[in-house]
Amino acid sequence: MPPITLSSLSYDHGTSEAKLIGETIGAAFDRTVARYADRDALIVRHQGVHWTWAELGARVDALAAGLLAIGLVPGDRIGIWAPNCSEWTLMQFATAKAGLILVNINPAYRRAELEYALNKVECKALVLAPALKTSDYLAIVQDLAPELASAAAHDLHAAALPHLRSVIRLGAASTPGMVNFDEVMKAGGEAQRAQLAELAGSLQFDDPINIQFTSGTTGFPKGATLTHRNILNNGFFVGEAIKLTHEDRLCAPVPLYHCFGMVMANLGCMTHGAAMVYPSDAFDPLAVLETVQAERCTALYGVPTMFIAELDHPRFAEFDLSSLRTGIMAGSPCPIEVMKRVQSQMHLRQVTIAYGMTETSPVSTQSSVDDPLERRVSTVGRVQPHIEVKIVDPQGRIVPRGVTGEFCTRGYSVMRGYWNDPGKTHEAVDEAGWMHTGDLATMDEEGYVNIVGRLKDMVIRGGENVYPREIEEFLYRHPKVQDVQVIGVPDPKYGEELCAWIMLRSGQSATPDEIREFCRGQIAHYKIPRHVRFVDAFPMTITGKVQKYLMRQQTIDDLGLTHQKTA
Image 1 (cartoon, rainbow, N blue to C red):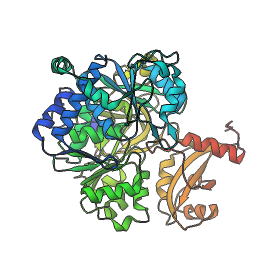
Image 2 (image 1 turned 180 degrees about the vertical axis):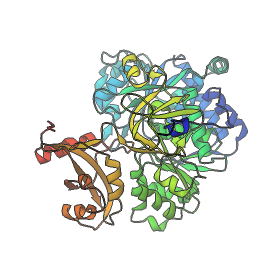
Image 3 (image 1 turned 180 degrees about the horizontal axis):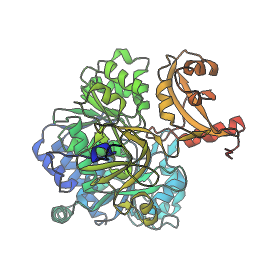
Image 4 (image 1 turned 60 degrees about the vertical axis):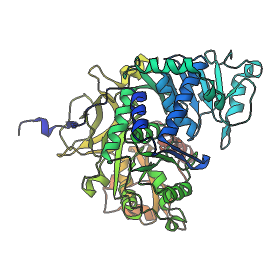
């Protein structure tokens, strides 16, 4: 037996000539504003916004001063509940300069979730849009805090939201007890400007600056607490991996409340002087295609379902996407066939895949524009600079390369912890500082990582470990299959059986037997889905993550299966 060496184990660490950035977001922002003052900074198509870095900088400073003027002090938490818009970005940079902790509220949240989030982190202020699609945000907040009707500005005292003092609404209309965003923009004076200048020298890069709630599939969401150092560096190194420069224009249809938008897009652009381009308030494939063409975007971000919707849009062929060079597909497992289509049909010859999670700011591994094509379409790349990764067995031992285990990561990117929840923090981050992701992965001899599934998604059929991702990748090859998700469901004989949820291409029809026949002789018999369901859509979070636990529950209910496993 050959001796075990470091290179034979699934461990790697990222090196770089570029040092970690040891400063606050505000300091980095000011330097970019000064260096690229007259270049485009923010373009928001649906709002008609087109600001240079100098214009963005002036608005950010005004808002930061205004936030201090309404009584907020460094360390206070302020929530933002809004879709993609210019005000979101102003809030991101203004709160950082004022030393406030921005709390990202999922636009899909409803009354109970909003109440939980605001109270969990004791938000003192909330900025909200009037509405999004069918959600009336104003009505939800008024229902939660009827005291708003008679409250003075910035002096709310609500029984259900005891810590909330200020509610700031977007738009020109007025709402009793709320203050308009534009009023806050004008509230700061010379005293607050002087206070901002003083804060610039006292804020530390290890200060918490952002709380993001992780989507809870069971129990309540947890508030991952991130620092300047966490997200500023991650945004920078993600941008480095796709060779961003001040000449680039990044189209970002991904939600800003999520790390993909506010870190990988906004901070990636800010640290390189690139332009941030938002095509719409919420994802719309046609708006993305129109925006890339009109703004001559050079980079495009998205989760796989977004790229699929763009590629399969009936008007796709009408648009000139030749300005595109690079981008990132992330947020959920990236189908190889979709990656190949993105490269060949959308001109994204240097598209990369990034992998990570909110708790790690988010990216831990990423492919590079210089990586061979096969590596870029079939792996999540290699470890990012200044980060360590390892893959371990259930006992926590590092497994040999090529062997499946749990992906763990350590370094500057790991969160401060879950807000006011040391127990959950300790469950996720061990005593040595390793974040346990819950993702199953392999690492090859060159350090490329492949995510093969979630620990909780792994299906054990008759004693065989089956990874749904492998079967999904195979079924993407079927010419009629547009998208597919594979789950495990209870079975009295084998303990679990496989079920494939399939979205067919437009105009196509198929039968379960046809799908199973496609698999026979190509993959092992125990990997062939016993159940096949044809659907029009998958249950998803607003960030495009497929909610497999809901699919599993629905399948169990529809097929009359029992939750109890019998092996």
